[in-house]
Image (cartoon, rainbow, N blue to C red):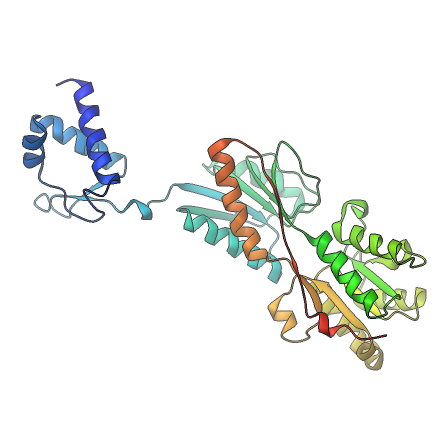
Length: 336
């Protein structure tokens, strides 16, 4: 017996399995039958079969008399991917489920960690040290990725050395701003969690662009930042600076919903007159208080991030994908 003959028999059996001659979960002809058909001794045939078992093409039956079966390779796990994500909000939950389903559809397991910002790099190293082949980084807007993988919804400009996928919130912000302006709103304020990085935040950039086109005065003063302030404090700051405010836009639906709740406590009459807007189209929020919002399709974003990574792994070409968004509930904008 030569190694060449063993390789030849193993390759022939693989081709038959891949070509459907031996379908999944079907019992393989006995080693005696195959050895006779292929003109080799049984020892050579047995070694070829064992190699295909090791490669995941075949499996032994429950007993020695049960024979050998073709394995359903669609169920085999190819590896494990990693996701680093800030959990605790509906948007992140939907995005996470998208990555999970995208991984499972491609026969990958997913390891999920939710570190604090200062622990992201440590978590990243731990994943790579434990056999995670690719890492997805989401919800850490101003944090780069050093491991092979994909940045999801990062504010960073497309990095030729990294894969990135983001929802086109700049386009969504412009559409929302234009819809507000068309209904006569000019006293618009935008509320963000933090002022960093203002110049690179696509939501801020979109509204600033729309304000400039519409010649809205005091443009940059119309952006407010929570910076751990209470929602009541924010509202008092807003109405002190712009008492005629007619529309409040939150960085996301959660922020907007909390501002609406706070204004109902402070001034329910005013709360009924204000148009609220946000980003995310979160079902749990919109079912309680529907308002105009940008649907960023986080589930789709997660699924597509996995495919982007797998495409990169196949050809080594970095990709930078922009996922279209949709403006929802525009009919909730009040006329001014």
